Image (cartoon, rainbow, N blue to C red; front, side, top):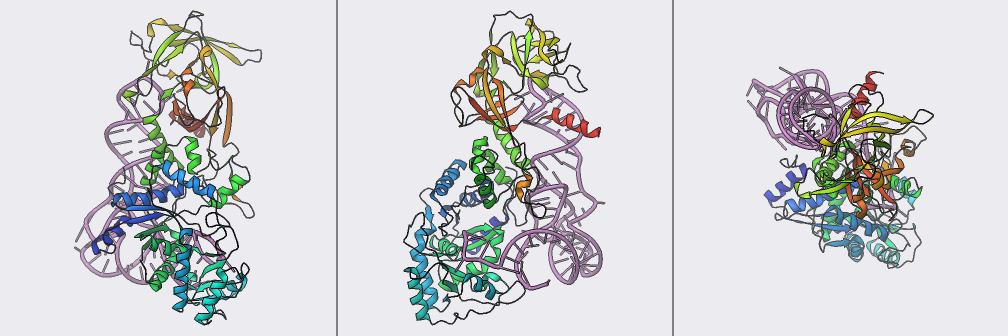
Length: 563
RNA sequence: UGGGGUGUCGCCAAGCGGUAAGGCAGCGGCUUUUGGAGCCGCCAUUCGGAGGUUCGAAUCCUUCCACCCCAGCCA
């Protein structure tokens, strides 16, 4: 909403193309994940850009799996990727493609390149290739096999395909310029021998194309107009262009943008997979993970993620977006959509001494004040209630206007209650809070116009359902967890308190029929989603995020002021 | 010390030679049966630094500085 009026730099490029008719005014993008991990919020940015641009310009966006490295890829990942994109709310319709479907065509194009004298079979091994490549400041030198006759190249390439050579013994290389200041142009490898089973093509191939070869060709085959990728591929663009030019085939425009970095999180597939494999988290969908599946399980609505992606903008400068910005959109969406209920996380008992022992009243409570169509529900009220421990202070500090001895406060939707005293155990801990209620204030308003500065949430003891609540906090305690001291890795920055489990929480009975994935606002506390680990007799709620809490802020500012 | 990029408010980010949008955060106030939400207001005389061109520069030029990416048969 906020940035809708501004066109990002990619749109300006497209506008230019539309003006000079570069692509016949068509816009056709693609989202090309490698199925070697689960999608994360950084991918969501890319998905939002690619599908968003297509939508904006009345074009199309393909889903394409960039599956050119069988040793890292798996169908588990392709399934999760499809699920996540759909969940985010994007639709590739029937346009789902796999780079592996183009292997035959890639092979033919390689032959074409060889026939033009622009590629050769190299017998150098990996280490030799590295040595011949030179350094950042020194030119490389030509491979002794660079001048191999075309016929011989063709013959060897066919033998490579037929499995006549062992892994690593030969490569196909583009013949470009070993002294180019751009290392990508120093005769890049475009095919390597890999006797590995591919998750889709099985054992059909034992030579696999490199990214630099597969990517431009895939884009070309699919008639992609704008091939959008991240900044680190900028140096690859001359190569991308070189291949398409030499092959004389459809030439899409590569455009690079800055990948997303989020504070207090890590968005590197390599590092995320390590968290999973080392069981530091419970899996790819652990609610602390920045993965799409983790966020889904955490209770983040897809709309919030989309809004976030649309509002961070698209640019070419590296940035570190504050996680609070994401959380803002989560709260904004959940505030509008989630039903309110009452539940107590850290209970303490309140006894209303002037309320009859066996009486129960069913009190009307609004389901969502932000949505007038959501109606009301009945909440049982009785003599004994649970309230939040931190809503009571025996000796209230300044600006604390919740319950304390002698003070009257409103119990939401119910009555005004006045604290008359407390019961303590032998160690002096408060075990019960004693109150009286004013029957005249039913519903929460005093007929004489008396006001309450605080409104507390509560749950009737005998009607309460006991639940387990998982409180999630930041997974890392450093703004940029990848910054570490010499010899340490990013796991040193893990937050030891990223998960706290509360087993003694009480909630109003109306959640009896809640289903996995249902999200509620527990009034005054935050948003909570029913987790898949729940059983009928033990419901588990994950805290998605707290409500904004100005009381906490006041306390924090006070304690800092005293330091 | 080669090449490619980037530097505009605490965080994102517009700006494209005509005199610094917007969002988040923050700070005030109003309002409120969630210390939630909502509403109103405030919040960059200055655009990495220094020179220059121009009536006029964040935008053009020169120069310096800082940060990011590249030496996988990964993507």
